[in-house]
Amino acid sequence: MSADKYNYPSKLLADAVEAIGSLPGVGQRSALRLALHLLRQPKDNVHHFTDAISALADDARYCRECMMISDGDVCSICSDQRRDHRLICVVESVRDVMSIEATGQFHGVYHVLGGIISPIAGIGPSDLTIKQLLERLERLKGQDVEVLLALSGDVEGETTSFYLYRQIAPTGVRVSTLARGIGFGDDLEYTDSLTLGRAIAGRQPFKV
Amino acid sequence: MSADKYNYPSKLLADAVEAIGSLPGVGQRSALRLALHLLRQPKDNVHHFTDAISALADDARYCRECMMISDGDVCSICSDQRRDHRLICVVESVRDVMSIEATGQFHGVYHVLGGIISPIAGIGPSDLTIKQLLERLERLKGQDVEVLLALSGDVEGETTSFYLYRQIAPTGVRVSTLARGIGFGDDLEYTDSLTLGRAIAGRQPFKV
Image 1 (cartoon, rainbow over the protein chains, first blue to last red):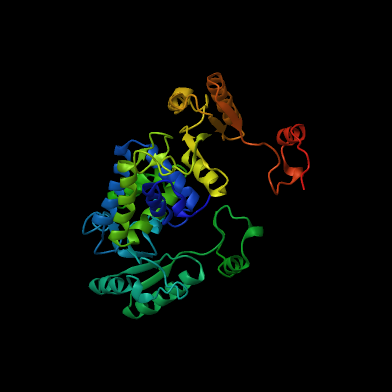
Image 2 (cartoon, rainbow over the protein chains, first blue to last red):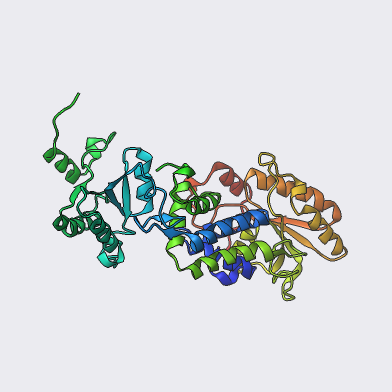
């Protein structure tokens, strides 16, 4: 099958395939398969599909506290008074918020950076919500605040953590980071040597 | 990450993820990734995306001759007078039309069945455009018409071909099928024995 859109028997089909194929990770063949799937659905289902996506683009906002995607001015987590508002977990994206929420182990609030410092991808500190984080900490001045940096363990995550530490530490706010080590269920044989080396250096008293 | 929609921090996001995740082959994680991708795009891009899909659902029609998706009453292939309208290639879907058109080897017209007979999937002859095909052949009565059955080589394709042959043969229309054999570039070692056996039984004079 040619990927050339001019081979499509219908411009409507070609346009829909082009639109769907613009999504990351969706090739021309998959896009055609999905377009033909949608074409076989009742029109109401397709409109439900497009309406949900339009509504997300049109109406979603960012929480003015934590910069997470939110239906209102302040997200459901930031407006929950049972949570500890002086423990702020800094994450890259809303996906990380969902991962951490799924553990049920965190009862603080979040700050969503909206990305990670990556010179290769052309993302610098000013592209992230670091300014908003520092302003937020300024508003909490005098309170016993802890910032937990929960970024990925790769080079970009480490770089961003280090940058944030350098920005936050002078304000007197405590900065912590996720524990590093061997994951539960990990096979030592397949653990990379950097992780293994750090796990040895950071060994902890055995608890029963 | 939990797949539970109630863990989503935003109902708008949850709804969009649910809509995208309803597509075949798109899991919850991919749907979230795609929703967040769309959220990062300019609104105009997202509306272009949803408009293209809505337009397909609302405006696409089926060619009254060949039942292929079409922007008008008659598709561009059926309205092309340079093509041989007495050579009708029967295919399962528009995807097969595109594959055959890409070869540049076919100058007849098509008939799109809209599926294939599959008792397991609950698809019978009446769910396909077989009635329309027979009516079309009736309109061509007295002319020297050939129907080329270009269906898949699997059991369902063979069953459908046999069913169509039984319906069409009594009308006096010639029925042909795609040549079967070893594909160009195929490795004999990895060719299934049924294909190989048929290729031997159907051996042809060597041509230079």
